Image 1 (tube, rainbow, N blue to C red):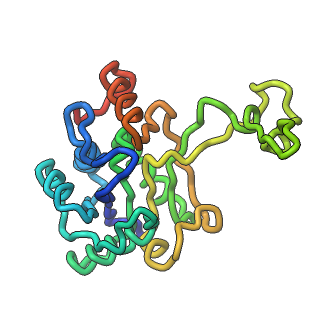
Image 2: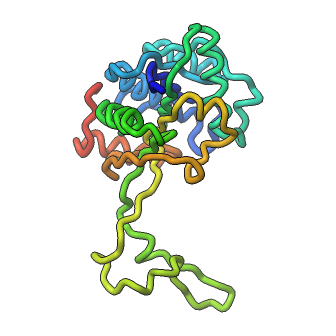
Image 3: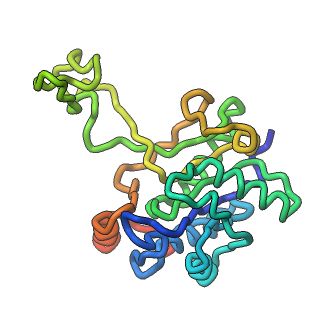
Length: 243
């Protein structure tokens, strides 16, 4: 079944605690949400991009930045402990009713991950389109350390132990198999998987991994994260085509 048309959803709940109003905090002269909006406009594969928010302030900022806010998210889906999955399902149902279109896939673009590029979206869509068995694609990157090599635990007896049982098999860092982390840059799922599954089922259902450089795996959840992202962009370590 075709993964087109692609519906992109930018979730932007109000009431962030770690960084107040983080979805509209200013990064490189733009509200954070504007980076995801501008990215979406550079991706020809995206048929429609909508913002899902419960906040009138965020909705106003998003619209000022060229974003589409066709509905307001219910308060029941905007609590601190609300998982993202029902938020995506709600957006899919709302937009299929509104547009009278059956979308082929749903792309999640978090405002707090501004380091993704249009080619990341293109590559994710290509991966899912070419693999009829996969239900989704998840962005991941190599962390600066390999947990098999350096992660330890401190049991009750006070003596440190390796977190991974096979860690003792390696005597050189270079010999340790690579490990990747889910970085939140993007997620792409087939429409029917979103509509019928109660959870993403990352490991129960077949997902492909899209590797992006760790240098662009920016995740903003605190003031320090925002300051570091500002420095990265100002120094040209990451270049965003919409700036």
